Structure formats: C-alpha cells, structure tokens
Length: 246
Length: 281
Image 1 (tube, rainbow over the protein chains, first blue to last red):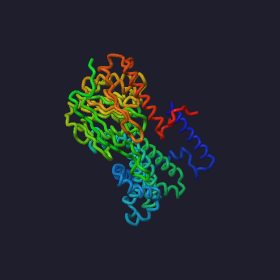
Image 2 (tube, helix red, strand yellow):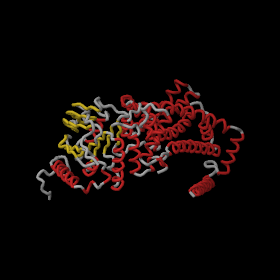
Image 3 (cartoon, rainbow over the protein chains, first blue to last red):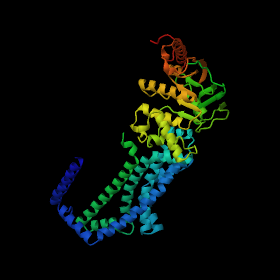
Image 4 (cartoon, helix red, strand yellow):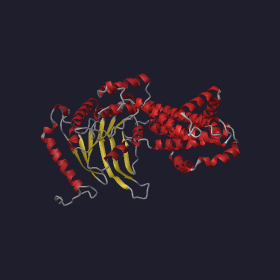
C-alpha cells in the first residue's frame, strides 16, 4: 500500500516539475521529457557511463578505505580507554572542522588526480565512522561484560560475542552518515581537483546552462545516494534479526 | 524427611573474614562503604540466603565471592583458595543478563567457553540443561521473544551448565510475577535437592529466604554488616508440604521482619527513616 502511495507521490512530483518547467522556461528548468531525452543521449554516447565509473571509483575507494581504517580504530578506542580518551579530543576536533578546508593542502601534496580525490572522500567519511564506532563500544551493556567475565570468557570471546555485535547498530549508523558525506565529497573533489566524473559533468553543464543534462546528473546522484543507503539498511536488518522478532 | 542444619561433613566452601569494600574512591567524592568488616561462612552443600534492606551490599558479597571484585580489606576464600571467576561457580544475575543477539542455546553455550569440551559434548550439555529447565523447544529462540520466567530459566540453565560446585544467585526471582516466582522457587528446590550445590542466595524477600534456605544471614545497610544468622531448621524437601503453614515459618517471618523494620527505620538514608518508631504525620 505504501509502495502505491510512494509511486503516486513520485508522479505528483514529476507533474509539479512539469508545470514549473512550462512556466519558468526551458532555459532554467528543463521539462521531464527534455531531461529524459538528454539522459538517452548521455547514455547512448557513453559519457554518463564513463563519468559514473570515475565517480564510483573515487567514492568506493575513499569510502572503503575510510571504513577499513575507522571501524578498527573506533573499536580500539572503545576497548582500550586510555587510547580512546587520548584520541577522542582530536577526533572530535577534526570531525568539527570543515574538511573542505584541507583541499588546497591535499592538492599540494597529492596533485589533482585520483589519489587526491580518494583522500578527500576518505577524510569526509572517516570521522563519523570513528565517532560512531567508538560510541557504540562505550554503549555496550557493562553487565553483559561482567557476566562474560564471570564465566571466564577470554578477551577475544568478549570482543567477538559481546562488544562487536553490541556495537553493530552504531557502526552501521556511522557507515550511513559516512556514505552520505563520502558522496558529497566525491562531487566536491571532482569540482575542485581535475574536473572529471559526475561532479565534472555537473560543472560543465551547469556553467554552460545545459539544464537538461545537468538535471540528469543530479537525478543520477540522488539514485546513487538511495542505493547506497538502502544497501546499508539491508545489512543492518540482517545483522539485527534478533531485534525484529519481538 | 530429615532436619538438616549446616552441611554433611561441615567443611567450609565460602569464607569471608573481616571483609570491607568501598565504592567511588576514584573521583573527588568520599568513597561509600558497601561492606564493613564482614564475616560470612557458607558450609559445603548448604543453602544460605542473605537478606537485608536495600543498600546493605548484598550484591557486592556475590561479586566478591565470584572474584569479579577484589576486597579492600579482609580475606575471601572459595574452596580454600582466593576467588577467581570461572566454571566452578555459577552466577545467576539480577535481571538475567542474557545476550540479546544470541539464541537461547548460544546463551547457555556461552558459559561453557572456558571448559575444554569438544563440539558434541558442548551441544549435549546445552540440550541437557535446557531440558532440565524445560526449554528444549525454545533452543533456537532469541531472548527478546521469551517471557520473564523463561528468561530466568535460560539464565539458570546457563549457570548450571558448567555443573558448578557453587551457585551464586542475586535476587533471581525479583522481577517475576508472583505465580512464576513460586513455580521457579519449587523448581530451584528440586534442582538443588538433586545436586546439593553450595548456594549463596541474595534476596529482598523474607518469605523466599525462609522457604529455600538452611540458614539466613540478616544484614544491616550502609555499611553492610551481618546482624544476625538464623538456622531455618525446616525439614527438606520443602515442596512436599506447605512450608508457609508451619508455626516455624510464622515465627521466623515475624522475627526477621521486625529486625528489618528496625534497621530501615534507624537508617538515616532510608526513605522510611523514623528512629522514634512513631507514625510520621
């Protein structure tokens, strides 16, 4: 039933878009039909595929690296409190700094290529994942840990059976926020370094007022965001099956 | 039926001598004494209950005996040695403490992690103790789907699964409704009658203490000290007759209740503090 309402709402949005585009003028807002034609053109000449590939490599590279670094680091910070208490100040400080401020520095060191782009994505995604993983470990029920000590479970068992599963909901939340910021930073990186990928096309079409093509890119970005977010929701659902049954 | 007092052989399983423990000494606040100069002896194979108002350090005693905490002063000995957490002691916690993301059987199995058993042996133990508490059908269920009484039984199966010589129980039935509590008390009596572990049982409930134990240790709050030790002296097995209908039960109940009332009224940090004993207007 909800699916039907959602579809109806989508049609309503497209209808609204249509009405606005007819009244504002095609130079500012393209009609849905013109956008669809532009999409067909971009797909047919392969430009969309190339740009999408570039952007996905940047995003997956930077985000994957961020997850690989941030989850273990957050776990270590939560499990060894001296480490956590020492690092948390710096993590929070860096998380609060607009990471875009580092872009000139990154360009100086890494140039304008993929390395720089991946690092910009990494820097955006890494902080929320660290912060959430750390918070997740700290939020694990201390009574369960005492119970585990009482049956003389090893440190590894306590980690594997209590700490890790207990912090999974927080880790997933961090990964979702990280994915959103990573996607934003993918576009930012493509706008500020060598102009490539979807961000590059966004700049080109935006600057030349080719609004139909521009809209296609925006919609593709929205779709990527939805897909990534939905994938993580699926993972969360699988890992938290024990919750759903209640 | 036989009247038992103390234990066969009379050797001491759990011994605490001059034990003190305070909490909160990390911060700037002055530490709060939970236990002060406590002496406690639990003979082998006996069922001893610790009763007393809130704040008398009952749970602290269990955590010290399990080796989860170290005493500030005094000596704790379990089976003649300093306490150490492990499979020789089963701990039934207040509030069950089941792992919510593990199935019932995985929860029971978790207690076996420190024992060197092979897979088949572990599986056999888990199913045996789930059968003991009547939960075989729920082996694959998650704790969130179970009622309070069933969760309590999983916790009991977990504590029993290592076949411990000592059972520590921290108000295990406090969160259950009245009927479930009575059924669980009977089940516990039957289980204990078969195996005769040494049990140290903490409870708020005077009735529960009399019903289950050989001996009752009455404690005072802030700091926890032993006020009185009482032999129950009712014959076992007690599920075969109505313990509550015996004159001895009434006598013990009256005695314990008046002692506890006095403790609470004289405790300055209690909500019912009223040393004169006159009703407050």
